[in-house]
Image 1 (cartoon, rainbow, N blue to C red):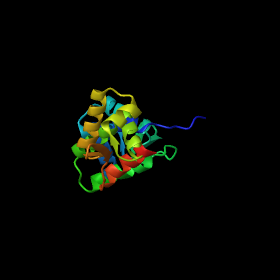
Image 2 (tube, rainbow, N blue to C red; image 1 turned 90 degrees about the horizontal axis):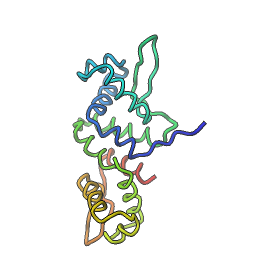
Image 3 (cartoon, rainbow, N blue to C red; image 1 turned 135 degrees about the horizontal axis):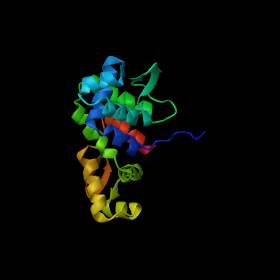
Image 4 (tube, helix red, strand yellow; image 1 turned 90 degrees about the vertical axis):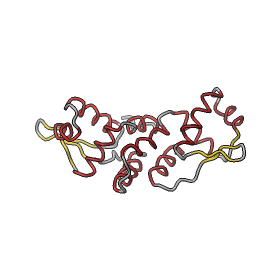
Length: 183
């Protein structure tokens, strides 16, 4: 059997959805919810709730169990997916500290593209000039600029003296996202 190995950028694409983040927040708060309960609490159709919950489950962020005809979900990381426990705990911590869903969404969008993960990994080697990053990534200047801007706006990268470097991150969600990107 193949071991599941979801990529960070795909997991962040799932997390970069306010509806799915609200669902996670509700699962943290309530413990377990079936699809119809989630639909009622979020104000979306049962079909849409089921689709959104399946996306979270596919990334290893929630688990399910069946009880007769009901599918009941719980915020519990799939242990086979190395990044899932770290990310789920960081999101849980953010919500426990009353971080707004919109802020969590904003941070997760930093890594919704594999090229941004790649840039962060390159920057673990140390500060890099724009030219060095261009050479190492092979990206067009405009693409690299856009990715660096997104990472900078979310507090993961800092430009200092003509070089880009990883910014110091203090909050647990940023730390978890960066740690996962660097793995």
